[in-house]
Length: 212
Length: 316
Image 1 (spheres, each protein chain N blue to C red):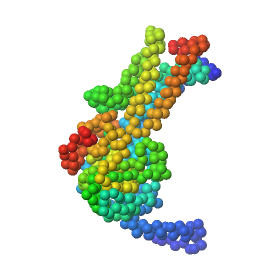
Image 2: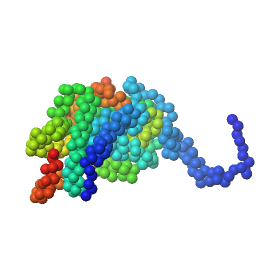
Image 3: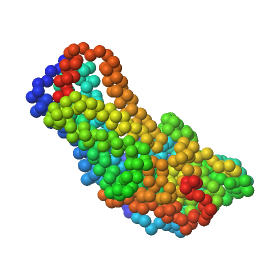
Image 4: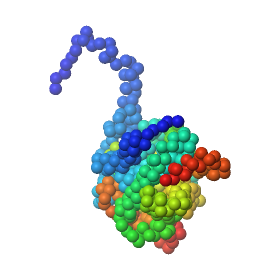
């Protein structure tokens, strides 16, 4: 078991992970400035922000299994940041759509959300991320108590909708969304398996601590 | 210009072209001269050198600003060379479009199998500047080099049973790596109603920007039907068949509710998953709004009469 002090996590690892999480955005901005995003930069922006939203959702969901399997308790300290980055990239994805795809044509946007299933599920997933982001601070965790855990179970629904959003927008080649789908399935199966298995007292303690 | 004549002692044996190379070159030059398509016949020159001798200007020239050669050749939907837009340019080198032959069959009096050069030879090449609107919602303006499809089809003397023309792309996993995965039902097939095919607009393209057609754009020969969504303009054609019945076309068979047989550009009929009202003109700055899509991609004057009395919402 690799033990890392709180101080190291706070002063070294967290800033490093934070910067790493911003890299996709930085590369996108550099590409935009240098005009190296290819023939259709808006499509590139949409794809990059969308893909990173999904990746951060999956990475966030990976934290708990990784912590339990590798017995690295300190990993939990990154979960909030990773989840917030999922929301951050989802917001960029949504802004790209509203601004550069639809150019603030609100009638078309509403029509899209209502009529086009992949946009309906994508938009729903984004809306569900908002309360999770808003309640991710310590004060809300304390105030919501047990409801906080219940509310944050929404992440599973969001991830499923996110993958569905990807599957439904593909024209013919389902390989990419399939890969995301399989990873999500593995992560969800792990949780289902853990639920059915009676928790040892030690694990229970760890879980309680982890949600604060 | 001065010519330096070296004495034999100055010439190293390694500088002397070997007989076989010399003979290859000689044979190559003979072949090249034998063909009126001197430059096109050459698969050994680098891409930038493969140009058509100045083609004449066709009457059909869109006034729009041309899309750059770089954008036209690096952003392609050509699943035979990979499903992402940037795959075709990356995999282009793996695809050798020579030798190439085209079979013409079905309801016509002069069917046959033709070597590419012989197939092209009878027609005067012209430059056509056409808008290309992809079903995905983006568009380009491309200066094609090609010849009239109608003129070409007439050469084979289609008979009265020829109601449709079907086109087929090469099926060859070794040249088209994308065909190793069954993303589409290979080979790619497209088709036109005979009156659509006989309209003066559609062309068989063998080049763009004066160059011979880059591999990623459907080398060595492709169809261009400017009033229809891009997927109708089938690439790398090896077979043309006249038929009495409507061809089973690839995208239409894959998702009939999303991709119609006609696939005329129509801002009024949405794709079930996205609007077709607007399009992004490739090359425009990213902050610019998309532009409105025109009915028949702006070619209504030439083609609207083909569809009089037809419900274009049903026959999309």
